[in-house]
Image (cartoon, rainbow, N blue to C red; front, side, top):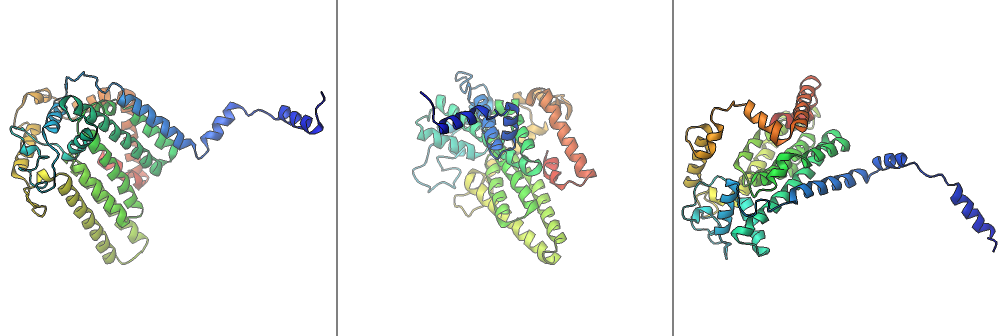
Amino acid sequence: MSQSPATEQIADSIQTTPTIPWKLRVRTFATSRSFAPVLLALILLLAAAFRLTGVNWDSGKRLHPDERFLTSVATDIKWPKNADTYFDPQASSLSPYSLPNMGLWVYGTLPLWLVKGVAIILNQDTYDSIAIVGRVISALFDLGAIWILFLFGRKLYGEKVALLGAAFLALSVLNIQQSHFFTVDTFANLFVMLVLFTSLKICERGSWADYAIVGLALGAGMASKLSVVTLAAPILLAAGWDFVRRIRAKEATSALLLERTVLRLLTLVLLTVLTFRVLQPVSFQGPEFWNFSLNSAWLDDIKEQSDILDGKNDAPPWIQWADRPAIIFPLQNMLLWGLGIPLGIAAWLGWGLAAYELIRKGRWMHLLPVVYL
């Protein structure tokens, strides 16, 4: 049976159409708009596989002392029927200070209450189950930190470097390990990344929204781990750069620009304090919201923790730090176990290069990561 002329023409065109080499296809995809989102999704899937595999790796033994303590407190606190005593650290059923013989409380309540609430919703509110819930949420927060790191890197160096940084963090031994524990570190780390990323936006444009987001994120970070307060240094640097940038652009008089910067910083501080007040009310005396006096029991716990870290008080878990070099020992652990030697060396070389270009070439965008690290 003979083919029609039209059919023969189509067949000839198909046979004569050249095949595109696979290298060209890869190169075309690498330059397309869908390249970065697809690769980032693959990186996040790989990171999730490492973080969510073997969640119950210790078969319920709870070998991490902080996790064991948080699991015990999360099990014992009760979700309140109303908010009448929410801001009373001694009476609130959510407060660790309402528990008998609770011990030293130096953790954030935001991770504790988030895990407690999710465990109740999932009907996993038991000692054996709540730690698993905490580990999964911990892993999800770490995945969020990888995503924010990508956004941070993309703004500073472009998509390729951002993807490389996200991949490095996805494969970081320390982050994978911390994601397998119900502790507060990965929770705090996400807010640290959010504060730094938004502070970079303050350097570029300094909108009221940027200052507000930093305030909210800083307060939430402090309600996860109090040491997040050290972010005040890069925040002030970002605000200072915003002020200098506006003066150079001659947006207004120096006095008016200084007034605007101060007002933005006051807004940031106010939102930080209010967020911390709401998400960690156990740090305040209460029982009313408007009482901002600090809880004396909480202050005693913070002081005792500080004395232990300074070596003024001794405790069995801290014997491992005795007679250790102040800088060499942490650096050794970071390189060998936290990041691994290849990634650890690359990270410190990257920091050194960023510092060099900041000082010698005036690349101000390196200011925040160099100063905070």
